[in-house]
Length: 228
Length: 228
Image 1 (cartoon, rainbow over the protein chains, first blue to last red):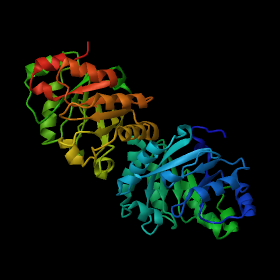
Image 2: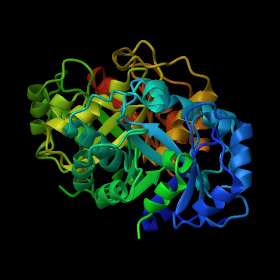
Image 3: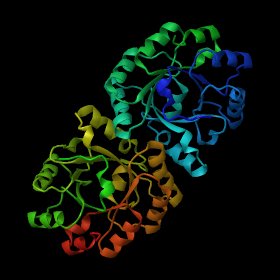
Image 4: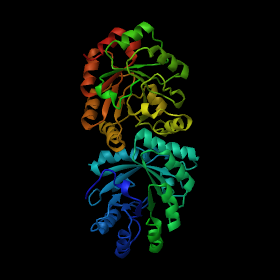
């Protein structure tokens, strides 16, 4: 465990694994050795301490950076992960996903703050579980997306802006416009990357691309998303 | 105009002046020369570009640091002020006062970011205009107030936590507990300071005390609140 301050500055590709989905140890080994820069343990539905801990245990013997991205305060484990990337959802209409759950987490737990990195999400796909759970306003003009990103970067001074299309491939022009509006923050993009072409296109604008679902449908397609 | 990064680290006492209230040039001179460290131009109700500009104009010839604390995106003037302290209200139940108005401001204006400092408010007095306008949840256990403060300091990394009792003298024990829970952020306290005793008590725990209303009722009482 060796927590650098801004490790993602050297990353291009993160693999998101869902504790609620089965993955075989063999496939996990292929992922870890694929060239992906880090593993993010993250899901929206049916996330429990048990399935989160199981996935972390499977990863334990690998040296690859391991990030827990908790969805609720109940499932924050800091042992055996290098980082805890804690999201806030800039375009949530429910204040719980901006401050409320975080406050409850701070009240209930002893937090390993050295591992905590804030991530400012902009949730774009109205069909996604994350948009529905957080009641995100996804009907946004590009200028509004940019304003959210600038709020996070320049007003709050947060290090990561995460454009999340979760389950759908997003609009590269939105990602391009947001990246052009940022000075210091790193831009993460996630959603619908299932081929080399998708990955190359979004990586052109995002600092880091996050690839998730395709891992569970085709490991070959997943491998094609790794930048080379 | 000489904007330092964290000027408030050398401040003890800020005077808050309300653009909606009349102040004579003579009284203004007494205030500026009283030993207060900065003037904050701030109000909640009936704030217009016109009355804000008038107050800024009256202050123009003085060298004392001038801070605009805008209440709405419509009244953000950056000329002739050294800093723009932009609040977010941690315990607002209306997301507008955390992100929404800020996003609109960013969309509509060209912002002098070098002057902008974020302030994380915790609004404590349910009777106050600010509590009502922001729909703040003021019925908070001290542990909850601390959790909000830690969210702002450790999660967001904000430089100023502002405990605002606006119009009422607060609970020194709450201020004490919050200050003990912070590492780096500066703690501002505002509300009901009308005597030397009030000022000394709150200054014991807060890094900076903010004095406002008493200016309009008794300039002698105001003078007594300046730390010496």
